[in-house]
Image 1 (cartoon, rainbow, N blue to C red):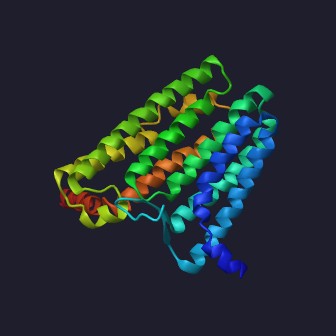
Image 2 (cartoon, rainbow, N blue to C red):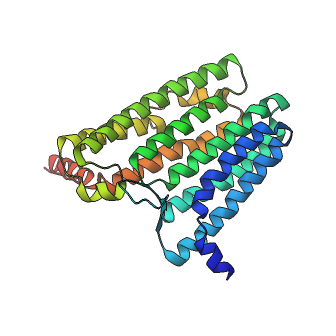
Length: 281
């Protein structure tokens, strides 16, 4: 009976709603923000365990938000890769929350907990998304929250590093959004499952791959596009610096992996064949 209840409950929706509600209550009830924040992250960890039980029993599955299927509705998708990222987010989130409870001053805590829980909600939504436009929306949410947390120490160095990070993440998001627009104009959908069946090797698809990959590589701080990362790490509070390395950068890499496997796999194979033929004496 209890197993059926676990399998029937849409825990994946709670992974997004719970941190949002936790952030709201931590803002409205600042005296209890630490308890609310840590309790919210512990609950999300339990929800991830329940999702793992569903995944083991049912395999990879979709959740139709509002009962509407793509392309009209929004799908949440859970497989092994998204479960791993959700589990890492919950585990690192709990550890960072416990450490942050003693790290920040009372004034800093007033701002930290609502923004921190909003960041967790954005990460969970990103790892559950099956829609390239939802990836953009969650990337923007994560970028804005991360920049605000980076500037939390309110020093000159922190504000400079946060502003540089904000401008870079907006530039990367703009490049990604242009790629999304090209794919939607060329193939009429933003759902990954639908695009994977309709995408063709056209100039629009190649341009979209270049723009989206460049934007995500910039947000991932991969060499030589890592110029913004050292100032942000050096000036950010210790819990935020840890989360930047462990989660924020990995979110862009996760999207890149999803796109390359699901949408641009044939383009990558073509590029590899071209280079192999070019290098073949």
